[in-house]
Amino acid sequence: MNTTSKKRFLTTSIFVCLITFAFSQDFDYHNDFNILLEKSKDKTSEYYYPKLLERFNANDSTLTHKDIITLLIGFTANENYKPYKTIEKEREILNLVSDKKYEKAIVECDKLLKTNPVNFAALMEKGFAYMKLNKPEFSFHRDKTMKIVYAIMWWSGDGTIDRPLFVLSPIDGQTLIEYILGGSIGMMGSGKDKNGYFLDILEMKINGTTQTMYFNINHATNKMFAE
Image (cartoon, rainbow, N blue to C red; front, side, top):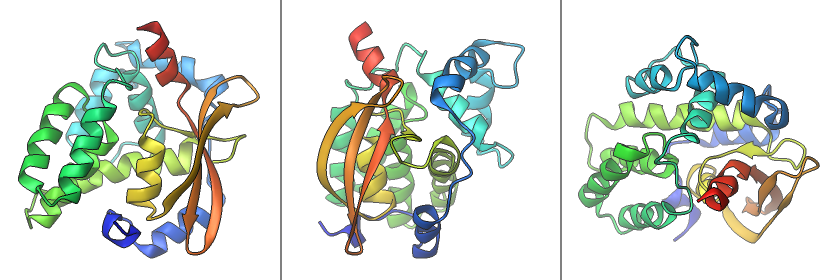
């Protein structure tokens, strides 16, 4: 499948901005992850996970990038966060949409979102399936997806080894490159940053250029080993 048929939602102009501009990154995994995780567990905090999830599910336009990243971090403490066990379901959904089985894809997205309400692949493909079916719900689900995209790419990092992007699923980096940015994957690997956090390292090929991108999935590997 070519990158044009895979690409979701983003226009070329937005894509250029994401790649060429310096991101206004305010999140530092080493300093902020545990602080935001604790706030997501605090019932008195504005960042309490259930509060943020309720606002996200309502597609609240006032949610900030920090709100969204804290929401994602909050989910890492959820009993249903089993990132390496959901990969098969995520790929099933991606394949259903690629095969134009949009109604079936929506059903499978809903199943996954019931337990994993911020799963990126399910949110993205549910919105895309609604768009292909010309359903009015498309914009609602697209906007939820883009809240996560912008928070990841404009707040969590810049994709370098010093500022890797924060993602929940071990395949989110691949999904972002192929289905949002419209690139293809070259070499794939893994490694650690200066603080010892586990990184997914992907070579992105797009418009005749090659760029190495880094994604922080340390929380995912920690969950896998804990299980």
